[in-house]
Length: 330
Image (cartoon, rainbow, N blue to C red):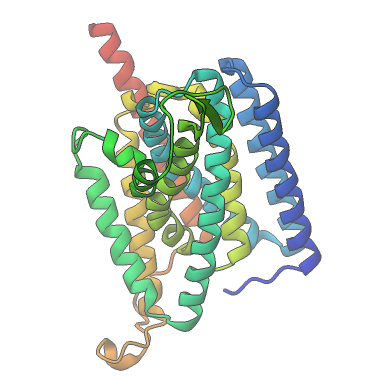
């Protein structure tokens, strides 16, 4: 189902989201500090409330179907963003970023990530419009990613080299970059020479590393909605609360061991959904003579939303129960 929104609504939404992001960045720059759990929780609640208000606006403009698609897409992206936090922790540790400057680093990294994801979304929408068979590829890729997510061991790789990212490693060897931070500034002077601070590499690492996650999150949300506007909006709302979630949960994430299985189930479900959708619209000559396959099941937006919510709820609850049992035994 192709969804279209009035231009005033789309551009107005982008303008408001842009102002919120800029305001958040300015706040992080002006008040470098480590947020308390209460402060982080309040900010997360604020961004969740914003997402729900935006869903209400979509309902008034477009009705129930696009509203359900946005909510399902937002929850999917939010769930998949949990993986980002593991790598964010590695990056902060790898570069020894002072805690009070981590807010700004995360905010700039998230803005970079949104720019990169915007490019991915435009490319993905173009591919879907031109090649209906691309859903076969997206579905197969998500199924592969789900299997890898479920069975990959925690100690696969040391994590620190991958945390930097290839772009950051390249710049590290080709630019004058010092080893010491200079507050939240991007440059400093060492032995009379002007050099960049490691904060530049942190920004780049956070932004470019997110590209790896966009490889599965963008196809996943296109399995829920084909509207580039809803896809990008869901990504913005999912990433906006990520900074506060980082400070609220921090290293606790590594102890919630069943979360990765919940994410794997969601990826597998959307992968299967994409393959079935491709079968319905099939134009590949060697599959059913190039005709659609009528018997392939269809999943409604409400079904997708229920699967996402129930799966992440069960995975989180099971992880917390396991964590409590482990502590009691200890």
